Image 1 (cartoon, rainbow, N blue to C red):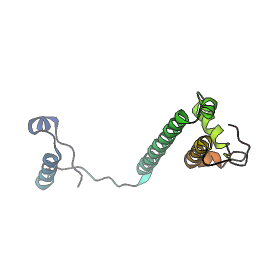
Image 2: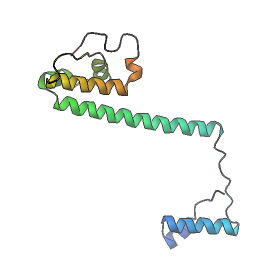
Image 3: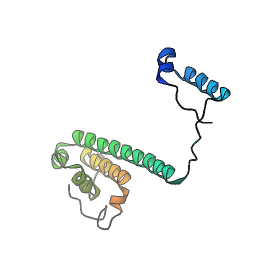
Image 4: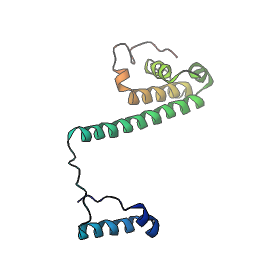
Amino acid sequence: MEVDRRDRGARRAHGKSDPIDACAAATAVLSGRASGTPKSRNGIVEAIRALRVVRKSAVKARTQTIDQIRSLTVTAPSALREKLRGLPTAVLIDTLARTLPTGDLMDPDLTARTALRRLVTRAARSLVALPGVGSRRPASC
C-alpha cells in the first residue's frame, strides 16, 4: 500500500520524525484512509528514473576524478605544473590521455604523470578508446 504524506496541519501539530510518520502511515492503512496506489515500477517513467540514477553517478565520478587531477597538478613538479596550469578541462584530459610517461619511477615528475594518466584512463575510457587517443601517441607534456 502506498500512503500519501500527512497534511501540513498534522505535521505542524505533531512534528516531523520517522517514527511519527511511520505510525501515521500505519494508522492511515489500518483505518482505510490510505488511498495511494503503488507505482508499477515499469514503463518509460521507470526507465527514465534508472537513466537519471546512472547519469548522476557518472557525473559524480567524473567530477571527483577531475578534482583529483586538478589537485595532483597543483602539487606536481613545477615543470609539469606549468605545462598543465590553466588548461580547460577538456584540453587537460586530452593532453593527459595522450601522455606516455617513461623513465625512472623514483622521479616525482614521472610519478605525477603516471598518476594523472591513470586517472584519465580510469575516468575517460571512452575518450582513450577513440582512434588516435591513448598511450601509443608521443607524449605531449
